[in-house]
Length: 175
Image (cartoon, rainbow, N blue to C red; front, side, top):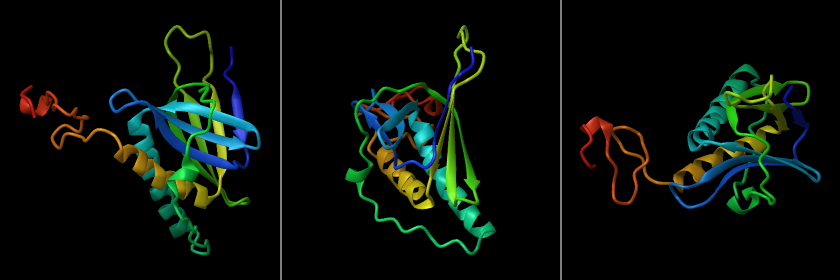
């Protein structure tokens, strides 16, 4: 069975966010166009990688297209809130970024991760077309979202609970 392809071109809203307490959070990428809302599940590291990737992509885009104006964004967290209902259509395995030069839109492609034994032959895909300003705000918000979580261990990079964690780099001793 083939996966579904959903395209929102252009999005009216795009964001990342989470639901739950630290250590038990579920992270989302969400976009809408009119009344259509699409939500997919991400890992915390994917939110962080997306934020960094968007910033790098925008820098690279500017170096290749010097005529592009810098996107103007006044970041406001309340504008970036997830919208309900949160009905994710799949868990993301891969994220890619592209540029539609004609429309001056960044396309974010999120591809489903398929589990072994799935009855699908092909992964589902979501393509989200957003302005450079919208994507810059997604990056800024992504950093803020990740920053609200548990601190990471400076040695192994794994999240630490309030009581610490067993760090493999310290041979299992408490940090």
